[in-house]
Amino acid sequence: MGIQGLTSFIDHCGTFLTDYRFRNSKVVIDGSNIFHFLYFNSSVDQQHGGDFEDQVCKFFKALRDCGIEPYVIIDGGSDPTDKKFETLRKRAESKIDTANKLSKGLQGGRLIPTLARQVFKEVLSSLGVPFAQAIFEADQEIASLAQKWNCPVLSNDNDFYIFDIQAGFLPLSHFQWQNPSVQNYIPCKLYTTTSFCSQVNINRQLLPVFAAIAGNDYVNLNDMGVVFFNKLLKWLASFQEKQEALDNVHVLIGHGENNMDAALQALSRGIETYQIQPGCLERFFNDGEAPDPGLLPDHLRVLPDWTLLPLTNGTLPPYMIYILQRRPVIQGIQVEDHSLPSGNNTSRPIRQVFYGLLLGEGREVEEYDREGKNLTSCKVKAILPSAAQHLQLNMLNQTPYVERLEVFLETLGVSQSTLNGVPPHLGLPVAVTYYWLRHAHPRPDLPLLQALLLGLVFGELSNDSSPSCVSGFIEEEPMLERMRGLIQRPAMSPDLGVAHVFSQWNRCMRDGLDLNQLLCLPLPEPQCAWLYKGTLVHQLVDQLRGGVTPDSLLMVDPSSVQLYRAMLEAIFNSEEAETTGQPDGPSTDSGAGGRRGC
Image (cartoon, rainbow, N blue to C red):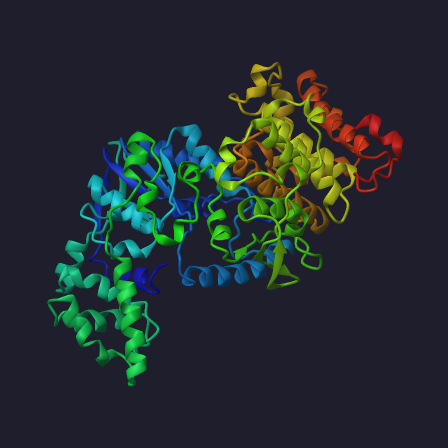
């Protein structure tokens, strides 16, 4: 949520934050907040979908070096009201403008790539950082866990200035994690409600009243700045009890009985938001157990019991909750050609199956997406492929593996035999890439396909823990150095045609991952951090269109060439099996003979 102007007020006054040496402690981290903070403070190439996993690794290493035990809670987004949706809708409209500027090579605004959230969770897993995806409201879960463990919260969300957390709140904007002391502590600022209320001379139980009034549209204090907050705090200082303040709030609200009733109801809801409730994540972190289904609020009773643990451990997409509640969903906004239809349209058939498994065939989901430079909505019908007609959501986790795999492959139009020559953990990316070739518009040309596959090879061989290293694909440093050199080149202005087609591939991958998760992983889940590096693939397209061959980029290394050709052959074999001369395949100016040198 957040309270407009509160962060500036706290910083301006200067006395509410104290210098603190943070070390040897647990800390509960607002995952969605740190995810955005690290991405936008890592100088990533937003125009080409920059990656930031190195920044995430450095941050958590700095914590571990100071004896800090992080526990990350990521927002699952299950707010039962329309307030959060309205905020998300307005953000999406702003992102359309940002994406349009970035597509023209202009700076300004912030945009998160399609796969970045998945990459963040994967990096946390690889580092052994405990994390959970909140099914309830994340702020409440964060505050509850911090209070239970008597440790601080790390975030930039100013709502944590209001929650009465005994160990306090560490604002990210003052958290100097990149400059840890030689004494192994992180210099930062600490805020406590005890210190704040003592300085402004108000009862601590009035803090939620302060926040509710400050964030309420009915209040007549117009200047949302230092004067506003000082005036409000001075008024609250004359009361001792919460109810006493509410009985006198009419002084701040315009005349009219109806207006007063609505204002008091809104204030009561706002105050309740800041009352720390018992959470459900302590037993997950301690014992790996899912939330108790009996403790779910009414709006979450739509979730089958089997989904609670994978939702909490981050292996089910949280937006499925909105689908089950029959609420609208907002599609991601990316850098692409805004004169063309949204890249999200390409993967809509995959989402339709996702919706069908959740709701049943024939139901409709309202999707919000970009149309030109405007955000519009449309109804999308849920469908089920023939292999899924008899499946039931409540029993999906007990459906035989072969049946779940058949549903996934039928949705993407790929046969099992097609993937036989591909390393198992790359089966999903190859299947998605084949689907993308058949559905993307404009039709991808051969260099676009080659660049994607070369990017996959780079991701595989550049990671020492890659499963392919075990199965015989050995890292070859000269090839990797050449690829890294392309990543480190100065960023080009985005080629809109290339950006648009790769935006479609990213969304196909995102929706393919979601469907695979809902089907309880019939294909191994790939490491998204290795799949797509935007700067690299854009540079590779430029090289390939300039006459450079894939073999020369791979430096004729047997292991990398073998992996590249295995994926390429699987895609072309699928195409030939579908129909000879498939019109939706990759276009190439070199004719049929061009394939031999792919």
